[in-house]
Length: 130
Image (tube, rainbow, N blue to C red; front, side, top):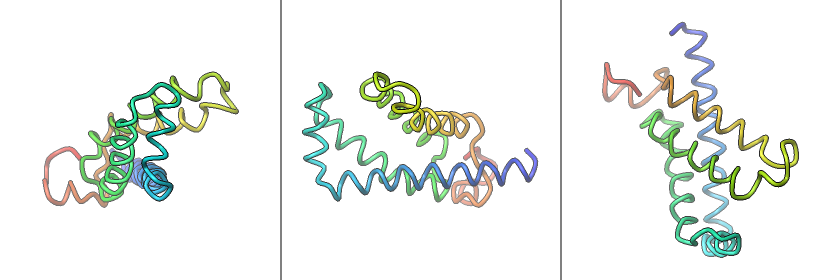
């Protein structure tokens, strides 16, 4: 991959990580129990709020650092698919799922391409995909 592509992918990786990290922090700051209650109110098991919050928080940090980029991105993608189809779809494209769709596409890009530039995973596991 060319250097320009790697820089673009790095920017996408960091932005994706920051967005999910911020959302994970917000879930815990606002009381993860409240998020679990909201999940239950829309028909999703409450324990999934804890799983989503942890994936967003820990995964956000990991992907910023470039650790487990493909796996974390896959988990982010699954979260976005869940959000789109359980919450956002009825509100339509612009008022509903457009933001989630953009995050899903970035996550798919990361799953397909990884991100080696300034990646801790690349430094620790030289020669392996990160």
